[in-house]
Image (cartoon, rainbow, N blue to C red):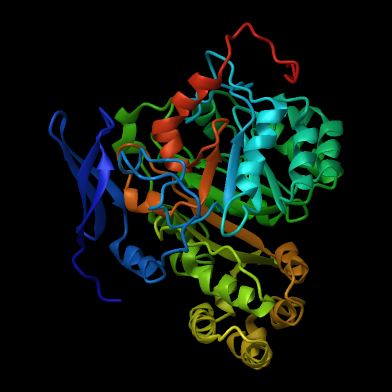
Length: 500
């Protein structure tokens, strides 16, 4: 791919006064930077994306979503019109609800300050926030993640998860440090019975050293015990979530992926989160600690000796044609992952005889993408069109899979054909059980915030005042106001609080 000179305008915020300012995104020495000027606080230049070639590859797959219905009128300008406003392009793919501000740790890198007053929504407030997410139009939010603070500090967490299941959420997650779960096998079992699908487990490395820096103390033994308790409780869908900091744990990305691949009975993914300079972390260390998604992918390539490469990864909107075609096949509206190409990257990896084999090694994913994109664009919506579409895809899909290079016993062609024959999520279970999802999400902060990314955000916070706020806008601008408005004094002990 021939590189071009990148130079485009957007808007951002001043990292000092947080006012909206014009910004420029441009290429320099093969990297992508953002620069902006605040009349009061001067000029700022920040690394945006460390590989121009990869930036151009990812942007080939960018697309706009269908927007959201019934939103607030924009008045102050992005990112202050959060609720969502009519300029937002992507519906809520994953709703976040903070269950508490309390935490049993005090991590130096946390973007959620867990000290001071108590922010802990009541069960009725949580019910209202869940309903607000389900009221999303044109498609109700299908997935919710309960976070905090530390959500397992709430004694009513199983009840909250059961409530979400009853209200129609098909994917229910918690984001946790896992310390309580390491000590309480009964809680693990209760969460599994209540309908919990996935645990996002804070997991910064495979030795003690990264935890001592990122979390303030060594909690690696507790992470291992948490995974063992998940195994005993038959919780089979854990995603390891490393907060990635340059110079701290970036030398362990390959080891983390290999660790996950050896624990596929309970671990189904690794979702790296390069550090975001918001919350507690000191921004003065940005130049030394900033790491972007291309940096991560290069490190993974180097630390796996090329078994996993930068070229195996694609941006999140790469899957948009697949969801649109599946919706056409089923005669339904499917949520499309129309987020900004720079928000994340992902691939699927198979573990076979101690080797890591990305799906791109035996599937022509770009050829399959183009074929499915063409089918989705030309589908006429009729019953006859559905039948013809199904027939064509059943004939064409095998052409994009080289079974001779696939791991033994996989038969990916059969799995893909099952999706188009049956058109159900059940058809994908076998695929997910045999693969490891490896991805990255790079959340923005006040230094690199791009409103074009915010307009396409699909991960949103629901708040007790009825608003739905994009993730990066919430943690950069809105969190403190929401928590201050709905918090109580520290000496007010909530009956739902688990003492540790």
